[in-house]
Image 1 (cartoon, rainbow, N blue to C red):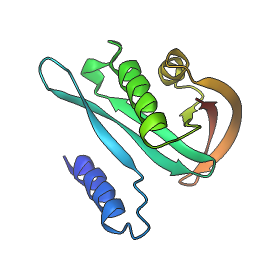
Image 2: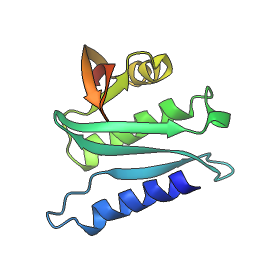
Image 3: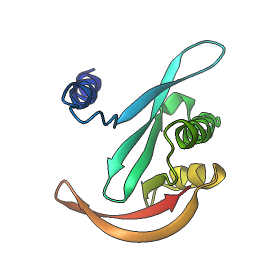
Image 4: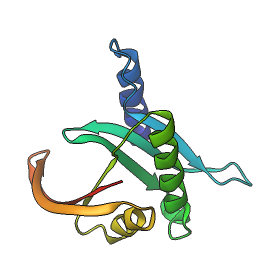
Length: 129
């Protein structure tokens, strides 16, 4: 609960301090159509290269195609409604499931690189659509 509260406070702060009318991160919930149960989120954030898609599905709901469905629908919507010509997908190289989700939804692998985050180095893959 504490982690969820911190995430919500961060997202709210991004909108509250938005004097330039920039709407990132732009996050939406992912729910099961029939039951309306919230099972995750999908969103767009600014990164150095441009706009990145991020997503997470609750562990109990993974491996059912929900992530792929959400990523495809959201990227299609974002390209049309927000006029984004390129959307980046950036994942840790060892996150095989996320790599497969991006590939399955039409993202193309671009490169791998080392990156520092929070004082630690990690290897990441970059995809674009």
